[in-house]
Image (cartoon, rainbow, N blue to C red; front, side, top):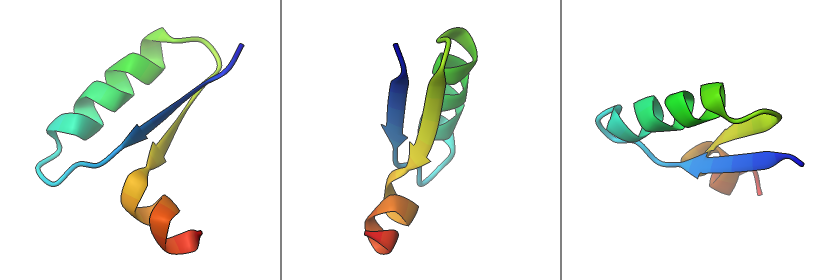
Length: 40
C-alpha cells in the first residue's frame, strides 16, 4: 500500500510534519501542493 502526503508550508512547519510522517510510513511520497497545482 502506498501513501501520498500533500502539504503546503509557508513557514516550514507543515514540511517538517510531512517529512516525519514520510519517514515513518513505508512506501510514502511527499508532494508540495503549490508545485503540484502549478504543474497540473
